[in-house]
Image (tube, rainbow, N blue to C red; front, top):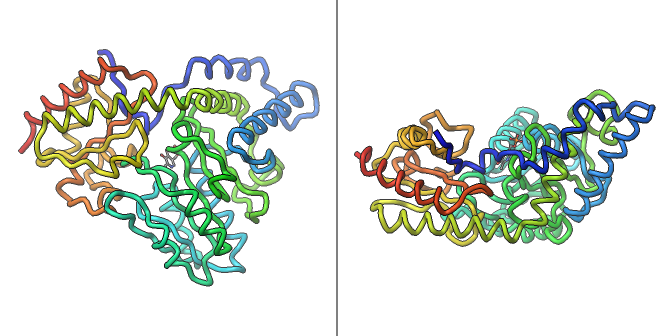
Length: 379
Ligand SMILES: *Cc1c(COP(=O)(O)O)cnc(C)c1O
């Protein structure tokens, strides 16, 4: 069966141009970048050129870009690295209840090491109130971590304002920008961002590679010990093909950003308006304006989310209920609970995340399928 993929917030296919750029680095240009002979040194130059290209796109400095194995690792490196390096200044961290598990569980781990963490609930529309963060600052606060855009409900946080407020209070600011990058133009200077996490496979790059941007003025402790790679801050032989692929993917997404967003918004708005018109007793989760253009999150009263996904899969449709990591589990999404969605509605949500390959025909098929299934399985 032909697969219709509507789960681009979970992962994306590798762009063909990205794959082409990567291929030579597997069995031709395979030298270890730390080696001193030419095929090693050339790869070192290659990854440093990639670093420069990424720094330029993000408006960062080249020595502020670290390659990691994933968005999850970037979140770990930044939050633990900053927390441990600044423990002498304070032990308090502020974050939100709607973060990805890579941030939430990292913060929970830090609580076992003497840190105190405040987990703030956003407003019912899924947006965090900057004044609410500011009110929770104490003399012990060292770090604020708020995601740029949410992976389940797509809501976009007031990052620049949070960053400005954090700087005014002398507190470091990290944002998990995994969902935002490739969808929103990010400028770490303009957005007042001190540290930022990125993952390649969410913007048509390969899996298993990510970026941690950390402002050069922020002290952080290395978490992964070993060799001297990444400016002596993160050990491990560099994944050269993946770095080349991720850089290519970022360049493509940066140059196609406007067109990409227009396409996604057109499909998403059509889907939401048709579903709203055809199906009763639904709830649209998350702010309708300040959200990623390809994201939709709708709850259907009386419909078991897991059953809906199973039925969609039988029709060749890939979608998600809550975050990818919690699919298969019956626990309602922590994000939906944090914004006050009643439990019955939280278990009946469907996240659709549109992407490059989707078109209006697929979307019509999706709408018809959702309508048919909801009417059939609704209790
Ligand atoms: C996917 C995702 C991550 C994790 O990135 P991986 O590279 O898959 O580890 C972290 N944060 C958010 C918001 C994400 O969507």
